[in-house]
Length: 575
Image (cartoon, rainbow, N blue to C red; front, top):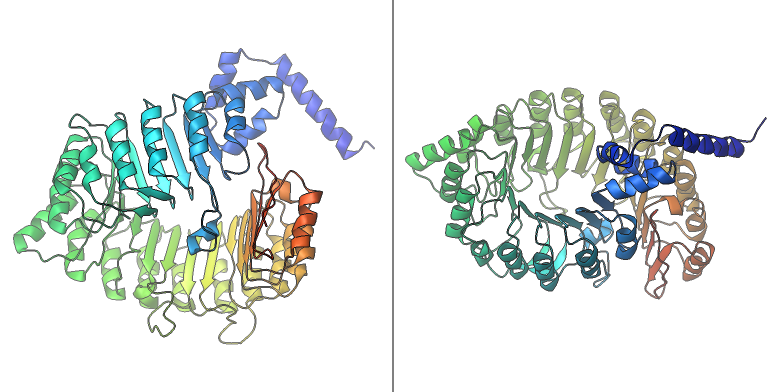
């Protein structure tokens, strides 16, 4: 019998010969490939043969880079000469929790310099956890004459002066999306920098800015941009100002309100209710800072077609949530604070049969004496009423193995299951047993699972279950869990599709780290913080796998990151 390696080789040759025999004109092949939207599909196509590689190379207009240190901008520009849209991610996710040292890197400027030389026709730039200065924003604004879309998510290093440069110079801008950034908010005058003739904006999101904005400039801007579909305001915008904006923009599909607790006269309330109800295309609602029940009723008529309701800034009580959800029959995504308690989640189960995504955030994660919150009972109630649920992020203070088993039995199609029991090392509060069987039930039952976050008291058995059953898992986040290197070895040896592994405060050491030598080049990143890895272990890994970027920070590697990507790699060792 021929070996599997020989068979794969023959299949590869045959596929190339077949491609040549049935070759299309270059322009036809490029046109067909341009219809492929999946990054993975396009990458697979480029491996078929040289002709397809070149066709894919020349037809690609968008590139996604999940790790800014996995490849240089020069390599990207050589590989893809016609890019118009770039999505680029920088720091590891743990930077959101201040676990990444200051000045870690991920600066965008070197990329912009290359793009300005090679991609003067660049139209879109979407950055996540990157460092970008005001100087870089101004360079961006003046270097790309047809620039249209800027999205900054969890970025830092810039101020509203940088936004002023974008507003001043980007004459064709259709999208300015500023979310959850570490921005120096100098003031709201940047909105007045849009020229009087500017009318192209379709997406404007400045919800996380803190200062008062120039409302007159905002009102004129919204009034001029008749194609605006997304408007997300910061909390400085009052209900009366919101009403004035909505009168000029009834076409909005996504609305983020400002402060939702202003004193209104009866006439002002009726005008607000009318303006909201006239937004017939609205399917997403967020903001609602400090919302109170007395004004939530103004939303009822506008909720009929909502598919996404984000209440993560509104500390609603269970009764208020229940009344609101009764008017949201089409809801598919819901974000709430744990102030809604289990009673509020029972209302979710009763009113939201189409729900696919639920996120429950803690109103005050650092208050150990807090009396409100959600438990396993609320989660179970949602699972009974929402059989389509496949994405959950659930912060709670107690959980049981039996409850999780019931939840996944009711909702077996989970692709994302992120359970965050806020007290590290918390066992099943009824049996005092580890939470191993809970996550064992998740990975056994949910065969489509792609992302998993584990918490609570966990032994190596949890990781044995993950390695044995989670064959489609791509991202795993672990904290305060496990007992030995064996746990991490089970995951690295058993999850063939694993791309990202994030670990903090776990007893995993050199043996666990080095067990992944055959795995790391197919992964995007490994991040280990406060584990038992030594500097010698890092050096050995770097020597065995010179294509990896290995970073160890501190005298002993309290923070270790491994970064790799198909397009290329860089090797560094920082002491």
